[in-house]
Length: 161
Image (cartoon, rainbow, N blue to C red; front, side):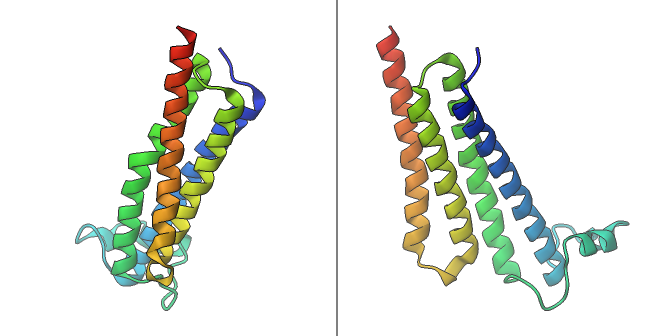
């Protein structure tokens, strides 16, 4: 079993985008923890590599993104990403390999999902600077894309029988 180039590339792009996005999110969270001194453990700032990590994440005083509020927002966003994105990518990959999705439609849905989830992340991180309706719209776009994809998989499987 294999995927055509367009569909396979869309899945690879989704995986790369989501992995990069969550990594950047975690780096920004660590950076903000250094800047606000809000660590998970009482001795986190005393670890051997703390000065290296502080430099690596460019934790320069006066350049924070919102302190504890940003950390809380970033943690909620990371949980939201973990609760949604891996399941979509897994469904899309298995459906493609099993021949349970029209690859042209699947490619478009994967690309739409990437756009919706990346928009959701950017809007969510900006917090109160943007209207929450935009955040909700981007989340709903991703959720609807998931449901349309799942529906097309169900329809394809029923059609094959």
